Length: 397
Image (cartoon, one colour):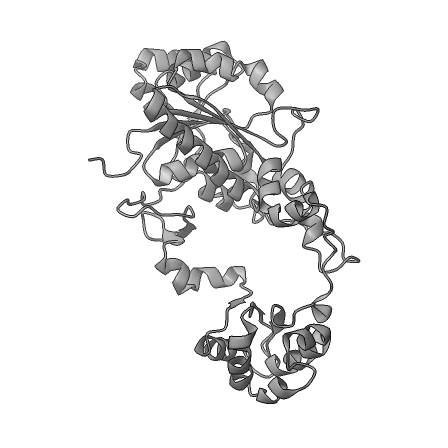
C-alpha cells in the first residue's frame, strides 16, 4: 500500500493565482505529484502578491507547497508539445486560464482529452462557462464576494460602506469545491474508466456561501440589512467587548436552559427576574436594553477571564480572533489545522479535512520558478539532448 492516499496520482497545475492552484495543493497534501506549469521569467503572478513585498512570498508558500515547478513557454509550439506529452500520462489537469486564452494556446478540453481519455480536466472560471459573461475575468473579491451579495450582507448596518474581503477569502473555499468536483470525477472514472470535464466558478461558490440569504429571497421573503450591534434583535446572539479591548460573539439559542446559568455566572442573576427580560418575547422587545446591560458587565473583565467563566457554564461563544493569535492556538494545532513545514521551522495552514487512517504529506516549501524543469522532463522520458534543445529554443527555463 502506498504511503499516501494519492501517491502515484499525476496532476498538472496549469493555473494561476489561487483557486485552481489551491485545489491542486489539496491533492498534493495527500501525496499527489503536482507539476506546476509557469511561464519562464517571473512565473505565476501570484508569487509577487505578498503584502510584505518579501522575496520569499508567503502567499505563494501556502498555495504552492509540495509542487514541482516546470517553467514552460506555452506560446511556443514546442512548449505545448511538452505539455501534451505530460497530459497524455496525467490523471488531472487543472486550469483557470480565461476561456479565450485556452483556445488561443490550444489548451481546451477538445485539445487535451483526445490525448488521454482517462484525464480529468478541471476547469475553473470567474463567472462560469455559459452566458454573456463566460469570457469575463474576475477575482474572488469581484465575483465571489461582491457579485453574490456577501459583500453587501455583512455590512455593520445599511449606512456602512461595503466591507472588502481578505486575500483568498473566496478562493480557498472555492478551491475546496473544485477539489470535490475532481475527486467526484475520479470516483466516476473508477466506475467507467473515463475521465472528462469538471467545472466550477467563483460565482457559483459565492452563491453557495451566501445560500441562506439567497434562498430566503428566492422564496420571496425579504432579507433586510442587519441593524447595528447595539440594536441587535437578540442580545444573546451578539458580540461584546471586554476590558482588554478583545471581542467575543455569543450564540445562546437555548435560552430557557442556558440563560439563568449565564446570568448567575456573570453576577447579574437579577436580570432573570427583571420584567423586561423575564420571557423570550420580553427579551426580544427589550433587546437594546439587554445589550446595554451586558455591555456594562463584559467591559469589567479581560477576555481570558470571561473565557473561563463562559466555558464553565457551557455557553456557546467564540473569541473574535486576531491573526497574531493563530500561531499560538493550541486547538488549531491539536486538530492539524496549523502544521509545520517538513523542516520544522515554520508553520503553514493545512487543507481543511482529514481521512481517518490516511496521513498527509509533511509540507514542503514551494518551488522557485522552473526549479524542477529538468526533473519533470526526465521523468517524462526526455533525453538530456532534448532538454538542452528546448532550453536553447527558450521554451524551457
